[in-house]
Image (cartoon, rainbow, N blue to C red; front, top):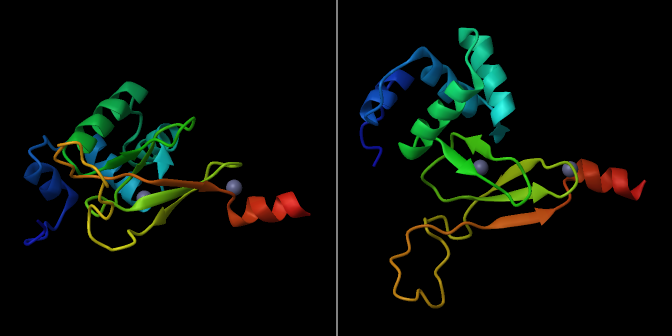
Length: 145
Ligand SMILES: [Zn+2]
Ligand SMILES: [Zn+2]
């Protein structure tokens, strides 16, 4: 799937069949350098790079990039959606119940999908999503002091 690695973000956008815009390039950079950012953080990252961009434009660009598979959207229950640039490996996430910080958890087996349903009900399953919940180290420390 990544036999010939594109050299620039613009190439990647074109390769995914997307029109290249400054906002999309800035958005992909922001998501990739960030760590499971929410929409507000992404919007401010995009604005730092290319000046004012409306929130609606950020949502539109996120939608296009997510649909194209360049960005992955994760949506833990009762949390705002987060976006990340690590795609295609079906990794999982651990979420802190207290502060909402998100960290990556690699697949147990390393191949996507690493979870095989015990009964697939006749579905053709191509993805599994697991969210682990708990307390991050700093919240666990704060809670015990
Ligand atoms: Zn926490
Ligand atoms: Zn992740």
